[in-house]
Length: 607
Image (cartoon, rainbow, N blue to C red; front, side, top):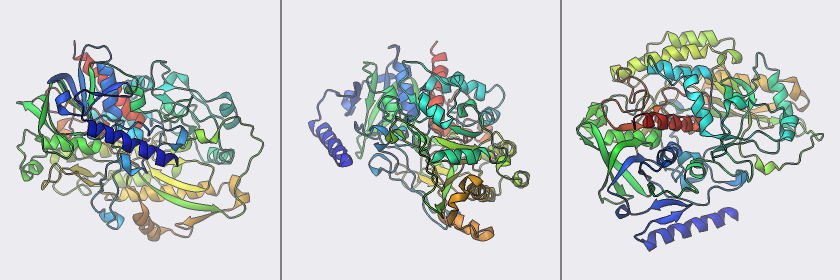
């Protein structure tokens, strides 16, 4: 009933917006939304492509002092009703606010295609994600700096202040902390009252989750950090991206758009950026069109063009602008402005599958001695999980690391991979081999819900894919290839993930209820298990990164340490595509951090 009402409300809103066609801008959430090209100014200081997680953060921060005019151009539309109380809001299962993109068939997944789910609305993927608010570990971000080269400020110490700046942390209630042993470190969180991006816990916990916590705490060498936000692996409670008053989704639109009324902050929706305009190699503006029409519009950027279109669409805009692999651009008949082979390469995402269990006796743990005053509907996502290093999972970690280390770097990359991209992968492989041996690098995430079985997620992959324009139709959705399981090490790690889940469910804590594995089945091992993985693997947790990686050009990088596109002036990329390495965590908090750090990099050049 609620969804029907919301859908009707959305339809009515869009009908009015498009049939009225008033010359003046409409008011939406107290920020200025434009719907027609005739409404925008001829020039702005900053033109931002994409009103998603990073784009809205940038626009808010850069326009806040009133000195600079900012325009955000967004392909999708504003919707006013997807931010619903508690866990009832729209999410990645709702096709109405996501792009309709599929990958090409994945050879090592029995030629299955994969839906590429990314948010299509003002707010982007922060409007549809699972609301898990985690960071990853210190060695992973130190790896960003290592791949960036000498003097990089993208190590843990260099990004922590921006993690703190990006959100307002709300501690759990005393009752939640007491009943469920929730601990936290306020020194690694920001609590600026002016910040409206919230990290909060539900006010209710599921009692049956307590035996799961106890069982995981007893697993061999399991670390239990005070706070997972401190850059440590282990078993911990994590907050959700929601406020602690109404328990509504907190995301880039509610934090950096709603309630803001500035004459210097404009957003135009339902328009697609086709290409960046240049004077030589200096970005001067963008060319764009109303969605689904051929009308050509332009806008001037007096200071910078900033691409925040996300990992899937950022490489498309760069390639359509003549920045990318020369051979691909020539095939698409696009004049080559800058031969930058790394654009669209190095693509990575988290991979997962479900190992199914059921209780063999009864319905599982039932604890009635927990007194709670909260509401179970405030639970919007998994708040308890184990984030585990490979040495904690298996004694075979050294064998796996050595096999990976001994590989020819070119053997498992696409044919004809450019030498610079190959050089970057060699550096990536050297770093990943260290992370495989580190107990403080997250290779497995097991969310704990109080029910047996569930997902096992590989938090690092060594199979790199590509996202490139279709040379036959560059304006169509790009060609997405995960190249899932193309490197056999990813299969080795997923096998260890499943085995770890099996060890966990054998815990004495669960013995009275005799958990039984129903899929794939405890007897499935060896090649039979690997074949099952090929049938069911999901090569994405909707955390795509690295198609415009922050690495030196000679290593296949696309942007430098200031996120400026190599070989250009006044052009930056600020979104998840710049991450050179997956954090061992859901990526939304990392993207907010990137945007906050980028703001300081941009402001440093305003002087």
